[in-house]
Amino acid sequence: MLHIHDASQFMVGPDAGDRPSPEGPLLRAMFAARKSVFVDLLKWDVPVLAGRYEVDQFDNPSAQYLILSDRDGAHLASARLLPTVHPHILGSFYTSLCEQAPPQGPDIFEITRFCLDRRLRASERRQARDSLICALVDHGLAQDVREYVAIAELNWLSQILAFGWECHPLGLPQMIDGRMLGAISIHIDAATPDRLAAAGIRPSRSLHIAALPAA
Amino acid sequence: MEQDYILLQELTRRVQGAANIEAYREAMAALTQALQFDYFALAHHVDPRTAGEHTVHLHNYPAHWADYYARHALGICDPVHRASHFAPGGFPWARIGDYIDLTARDLHMLRLGASQGVGDGFTIPIRLEGEMPGSCTFAMRPGRPLDSAWLAFAEIAGRFAFDGARRLMGRQELRLPMLGRILTRCQRECLLWAFRGKSDWEISQILKVTEGTVKRHILNACARYRVNKRIMLLAPTLLDGTFSITEIYGYRDTSFGT
Image (cartoon, rainbow over all chains, first blue to last red; front, side, top):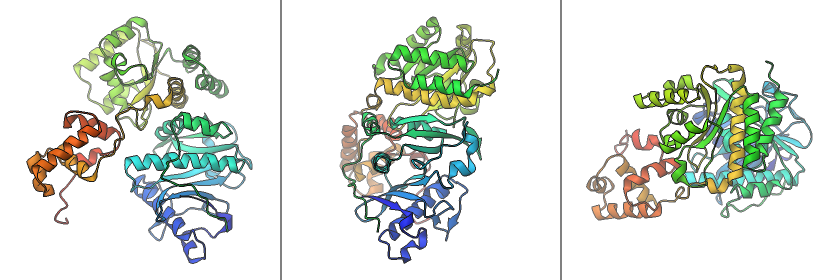
């Protein structure tokens, strides 16, 4: 199941479960999965709440989340979208990765915290990943998003390009805190779904897509 | 010489968008020159003579060196390729020794390459799930040193260029057909102990099943990957993530709860 969560509709954070939001447990599961991936596995230096949840200052009401869950509501994969008209990671901390001013506009969003649950086996992981990529494109088209921007480690960058969508570098990569990072722009238009399909990226049949109502 | 980012970006776009192999080679040659290098080579690390047409293998090396290289199938043992399997990112060839121990044969090959017109180089590893490892290399004629000012752009351009080549070859066709088979829990368990060096009898004692059951599970796993010997399962199951290196070599016995 794909859940599209527009945080402006809800209180965000691990306490969200205390509110009458149907997505509280799923958000908590996502923040816990993010802690497991980005803090425990990748050793990023980012804040952790209550020893269990990775939540930072960009997990605020302007953030949007795409979350894939299984039938029992367990987190499979997720991504966070930050509007570039509000403070976001590229524009706030990594402008040096851009040769010109970082792209900014109501139809440009930053993809951050692309997270695949560590419990997935290799084949499930690939399915969840491909489904989330397709969901990002479908969501972008539905919301009139023209461009995504993202910061990626260069090894992951090669994989991002392999999804088949149209990407361009925004500037020179740099070694930052021991990681070689680069910023890229991903162009989204009506041809993008076909480009993904031509590269073999399609949503998994076993993951049914259904957006929860935003209220 | 001042780096012109806009020009390099435009040249990279031309490589990305090339309509056919000829246009790609032309655009890649222009990008290589703008990055102050003499040669480019994009390749999956396979023997192109046996790997078939669905593999990336594009370069502008001197023809006699390329012929020698292909005749001796150096692509599968090239020290630059082997080092790229361990390097975290792009690396100048002077640092190959940081990643692998160079054998006498490797040193001979590098010297031979230099005598045939390929001196120093910078190689960007390309590791994609489901595909053989590959790399994008930019190289110099002998006697021309690498200019570190250009390496950051080479690192990113090389990745975009490799993807441009994949697009031309048909990205889906590059996927290794035998990877990504799904094993049952029992097949996986038996195979894991086999890879850890246990005999079928030992595995039967560990898993508390009969030796015949162990044999059957392993044979069935072989059938799923279409190989006829269990050792042939090691590379594909590591490559597709069915097993991790640490699972096989870094295990400890936890059956007593320690």
